[in-house]
Length: 368
Image (cartoon, rainbow, N blue to C red; front, side, top):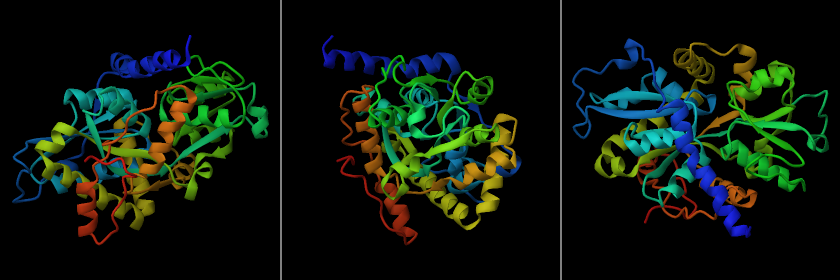
């Protein structure tokens, strides 16, 4: 089969993931809120005449801005009498489908689902409007089986999902070691095992995997089970920064309700500022919201190292998203994507300017 045909077939598989995930887990679960989070300030008015703004996020610490923003009421405060409604997702493809269907308006999401969603829609469905987090991804391994990088060859390493952000990163790293892996099957010099983060710790305990390239808190959960950190992905990037979580919006919603989008971005910037000023309280707030959303808070031995490895930022780190897209192409998971126009940072930079902070850059991929 010609190389281009193989790439197209591979991309077709990746592009189909949203539908598969949608069938498996629906549009996500509705987040539970406390009365304090639902409270609207006296005299507050609706923004753009909207009854509600629907916000999506994951129950992951790498979505800490959203977790803290929900828990501390920053989003509702910024939206006034317009109700902030929340949906919690387990996977990026299902969140993209929710955005496409109008089930959510704005979402916190990883770079690979944003790239895949934008590419699949031929640049018509979403814009990245801000950053949220960097880091928080590690290669953790069984120290009895893997003591150095060279020992990874021949082993079974888990990633959360075919074509997801960590899957792309692992495949790119494997290629840089000179090893070969079929991107679809995961078979090769290293066995890449696509495993849901929820079951990865059990897979590790059972011995069915020898390690995992995963985001927090899964990485720290594995360490608590006796795994060791072989590699922090941040060490592979310039300045040790790379995008792990972005903020996206439906292009339709952005066009029709810019004031509401600006309010959510204001809340995000305010939340990140509060996180920086109150790190211990922020960690506790994020964990509390995780407990509300999932039914179980993280133990300190997992929460503390996981939270420490994540940097919260308003900068979308656009150059690193472009690099991640190139990694997906090199790995054979994606045809060369056309990402021109994927960013619109106009409203974010307006919010940052009002706060006396520096503007952020779209790496030449901004909407014209």
